[in-house]
Length: 170
Image (cartoon, rainbow, N blue to C red; front, side, top):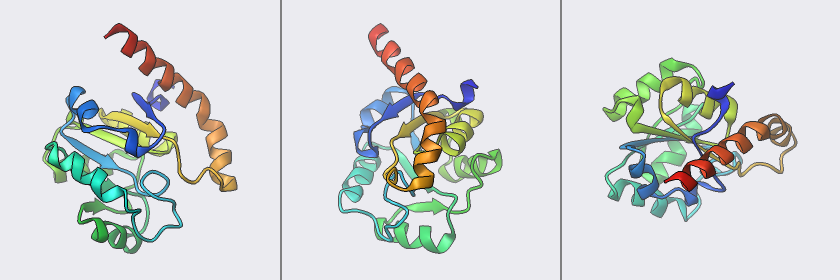
C-alpha cells in the first residue's frame, strides 16, 4: 500500500518549484499531461505552462512529458511547448519509466514523477524509485475522474500528512 502514497502533494503543477525538486536531489521531471498540465479536453497548453516549464529547465532540470495518451495528442501539445515526450508510456508499468530515465540520461532516484493519478503516476513512480509528486487533477468536474478521486483520496491525504511531518522535522 505504501507504493500508492505520494512523496509530495501539491494543489497544482504550478505550486512545484525548481528549488523544491532540487532540494530532493531531482535533476529531471517526468510530467503527466492530461489532468496535470491541462484538462484532457485542451488541445494546446495553457499560457502559464510555458513559463513554468522554462523555470524548471532554467534551473537545470531536464523535462519530459510522460503520458499514456496517443502520440498525435501528445505531439501536438508538446510541439507547442517545445519539449520532448513519451506517449503511450504504459504507466504504471516499469518499462516506460526505464525508457524515460534513459531518454533523460538520469537514474530514477534523480527523477520526479509529477501527475494527477495515484494508480498510474504515483504507483509507477514509486515502484521505479522516483520522487513522486501528486497534483490535484484539473478534470475533477468530470464524473469518472471524480469517482477515481474517491478511491485515491485516502492515499493523497496520507501523502499530505507525511509531507507535513517531514517539513516539521527539517
